[in-house]
Image (cartoon, rainbow, N blue to C red; front, side, top):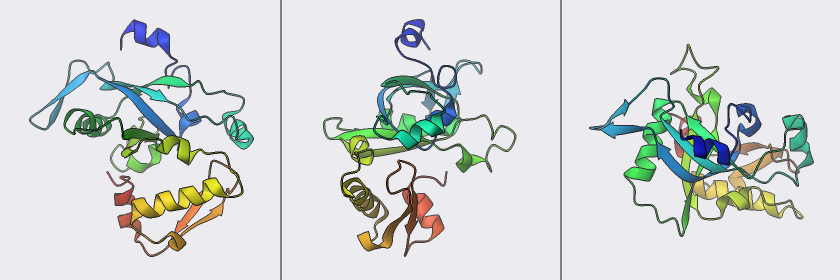
Length: 204
């Protein structure tokens, strides 16, 4: 990770705790690989460095006062640097940015820090290794996900968004708690747990 890049934006894990962005959708602005993939295998120059660095745009949560209680006074900057520490995360990012032709005019890549999803794969380091969910969405999806609640408009948009991603009817998706909070509990009917995790790319 270059020093000039470090000076431009705070580093997640050093300047910003990982817990502050847990479960939040961050938009990838730039992918800087520090390793390569050859013949399907990840090759890293040094075990002391992350596999890559992401420059990400963090969501604007200024209109969500309940979130500040979760952060305990931490205010998220507009952008930050996110180190990619897990080999599987790097392989997935490499596939998206190096092996897939993404039209950034109409699409965007969102990453979510979801550390509990890979504990079975990283038993020893499950408490410290970040685990990222990487998804490609239509451009503007991040703003849609964090749209300020207006007579239920944002919640309805979220329901429509999830129903489309999961391939279920809108009435199968219900927000059971957190209607006015960015942290929500959502119930989805008519889909198995395994299928839901696969649709959301959480089963790797």
